[in-house]
Image 1 (tube, rainbow, N blue to C red):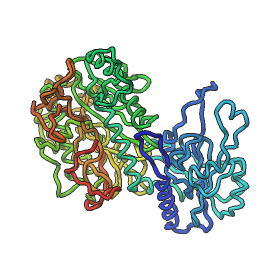
Image 2 (cartoon, rainbow, N blue to C red):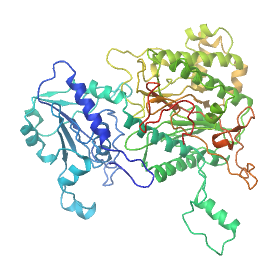
Image 3 (tube, helix red, strand yellow):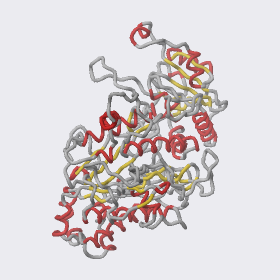
Image 4 (cartoon, rainbow, N blue to C red):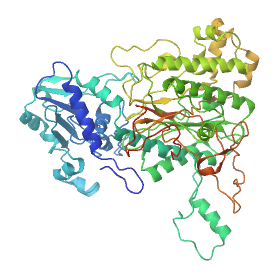
Length: 621
């Protein structure tokens, strides 16, 4: 069992055992599989900072080869038929192996799993700690046998495989080719590097109940990190000093338990402060040492930079009064990712333009999710269920039940709704049908509607063999072009962005500029971007809300009246209305920009605990 103590999630080795079984079954179902085939995978290696002797923290999931190396280790169960190579945390996720420089092999016929670990020098015990015997890894990772990596050629020879199945294939998002397993002496074996990749991709595409449980955990913790970190009664880590007055003690406790991201935001702060709060919470509360991707804390015009936060723009802007904040951050646990985004005004009050843009994207999100789940429309915008979601920072991970729904059609649907709303706002004029023909929607939403989520934040499987990417603006950035299936995990993340470069290009193009009202557009040029997605998600195996960020009720005074911290944003919904959320407690609202996680699964299924999930089940935090 993988467990980091306290309230972190326990991940059973049974998760990997099930993945191993699925992988072997998938390989056996392929035509012409040679007898005595052995899967051989190589995981990640420990790296250093350029030419120095300083090690880089090893993470199994983060490599260019999304399905190979570290990532494969994470997928494969302990004792999986795959050959796993992991030198660090990578092996923890694939074979459950956390150490670097390991190999793994699995006999497809018998399912026998073999783990190869490095034979460490005696100096390791001086500088790095105890050198564990091979039996330690056998018990820890529940594999059948453990050998040293220096003996891999000899051990594989004794297994007498007719064919070694190695992983080699192209990732359709990055364009990179996975790194094929290699060891000294591999030339003595018959190697097949074409059969494994498509089977591995399909196994990763459809999640098991245990994988969905881990994904719910990562998204729940990440959602909570986006909320305000509040000190809860009885959680003080230090005893109350008798010589302190209650007022002084309260101030001390406030310093010990700083507020979290959303309610901590104030004009005058730096964007990187929000990043640090998020990472701190994910690590201290969820055991998440890594984030799924570079944290994006864009404010003002930076909220229109889709992949903000990189080295050239490292979340270093000062937050100003009136800015729209777009925080896109997600933690990862045991290499399973989350992807959560939140949009709200820094001062807590939506301007009419901010409200119009936000609600336009909200409408497109609800339209997409209604199409994915036929026969069950999302709740009305005024219902408590939706207002609760508006109080949340949502990442829409959805398990869809709509069979036959093609993801490219959902992207076009979102584009159409955006254009209709921009016409109502006065930014555009003319026929929406004509705008669709010239791909005007891609000017305001250049990215794809959403992507698969799993071991990688942009998980594999979006374009299997025979499915071509549509070469149109916007759609060419869509990371999945296939029909949705049960147990897929997808993000639903439409957005409206006012990107100067794209706006200038559209104005210079007569076919598009004829629809643009330049005077009204100028009002939005410094707006930035928004992408709220309060749709429904799947929980467990059922269709319903996935654990996204549910804002807890505000503190109350002795008479039960709501009290707001002095100077804190008054984050009420744009319509000024109130809501009584879970347990009837009054709530402050934030209209989030978010991707909610939806799981694609049968509507009549039950979750891991035997409890049926439905859209009415809202206690997600």
